[in-house]
Image 1 (cartoon, one colour):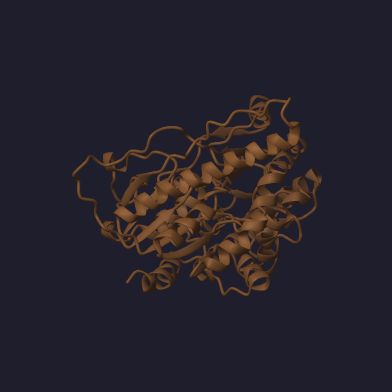
Image 2 (image 1 turned 90 degrees about the vertical axis):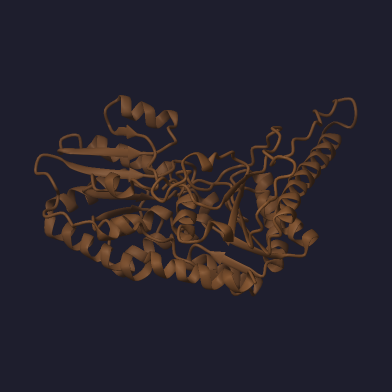
Length: 427
């Protein structure tokens, strides 16, 4: 359920190539992603749910992170059945520019050369893997700044179909100024080259159409099927002694300030029988400090097969997005992968995000959650008190949330759209 943009992490490690003489299986579809199952990111979980019914001979997964899928592949382990291909990044040997040779200008030139070599190395490895497997369609996912340009180049070299899956807005998901500048200039060329563009949200689909005159396909993030079918709580809150606010997912620039607001709200509510549970693979220092001070309980990340078990502990599910203006485009178009699972659980959802964020607008329009769009911990505290004081209101919010999960995030519908989008390109 963690959903986090990941900067490139070049590796000098050699690729895990098959033994000489081993005949590779030909597959029509290759998916390139910075995060793949069994990773705990939202992107990996969505790919798992979309691909779990596909035959292993129909696709392969390419990533720069090494996975040993064959050791424990099974339908309930979080692994997919397709081939996992490790593509380490090409690492440039260029060192820093000597200060006596042109200073900053030379340093920039050397950086540009190093970047070109890195992209060429990554493209070469990708071309080699795709050519040997006679791939017909390469679907590249956002999440790494260099996967999309390398995939576009590789597909051009091999003359195969090229598709893009935007799990976030590629041009704006990078916090570094240089990466964002590069991505904004590459995005138009990359998207216009693609034979199909898939988006994770309706507002991002609309932005792609407005900016580039491209008809993108929207595939809603599929909800967890076990969460959709799990029994509703007989009463709310589940315990008269203490209510539980729960957050599950990645903690990073797109939500950390909103989570800190909730910690401050919990301090204000020290007199209320309440606990804050955080399930995340990311544990920044400020979060650890808050846990040590007793303001929250900190647990590990949530695996793809344990979503229902973890979220069942919640009386209130917390959905935060940042108030930073530098990430406005991401926040306004984002649909976190956890959102569909939150809705499916049938618990009241507390949204803390800017008014213009799609998630704020969605929950207000469908009246299926309580939205706090003020960057104010006291407002969060007041919203929690209001929920706890009106149990019938909390139960109603939960019922509406699950109903909208069935309407907008049905996993079978998402899988049908995914197949209908890609299959015509595989023959």
